Length: 279
Image (cartoon, rainbow, N blue to C red; front, side):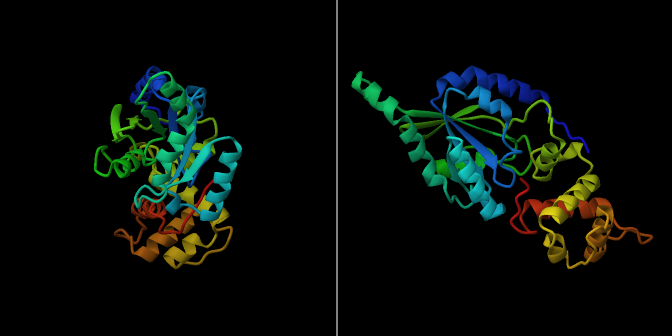
């Protein structure tokens, strides 16, 4: 299942980011804690190569906390300031602005010595679609400034948002990269909702998800749906068992694979199968 999704507005977004990067001092990059490597847009590294960086492991409440701790350690060893965040509850969000200010402390002090009395921190927030940028911004501001949604592509244009008197944030639409060289990365992004669901075959995607879960968390599906099957059971047979257990049966006794797949994917995204990390 080779997944590619790079609509025209993403090309415009990349161009807009390139044009505006000189206006900011700090780049705040949101990653999905369930797939910290697969959700890291390689284009951001080149775009922000001369900027201070903060890595946000967002949706940490949905991810395997032991693996998240390892990924946090990994990114810190790469030289990034890194924070685990749950944008829904707000956990970890209070750490972001102090870190950004600390990264800018030397520049702020230098400018003040030159006579600049007021030096705001300006940051650009970037990340893949549906990673939770707008929810995080709304938590930072304390009210709904940015439009949110559970589908990829909700934010379509840039907007400057003043978080505090001395802290300004440039919000940008979610952006992927033109081609997923690694098929596994494309699949994982689709599992978590970073790719538009309308272009996907949900039964096929669900079967691939079953394969991943059986490999990484072999009891997750069995525990959630109360079913039993052998280790080598084909994914489409597991999907059928889930459908039968949930009563998703069409006239004639056939399992509704589409409805079953949609439920499985939705419940995975909502952590109803447990806190799972795919990277």
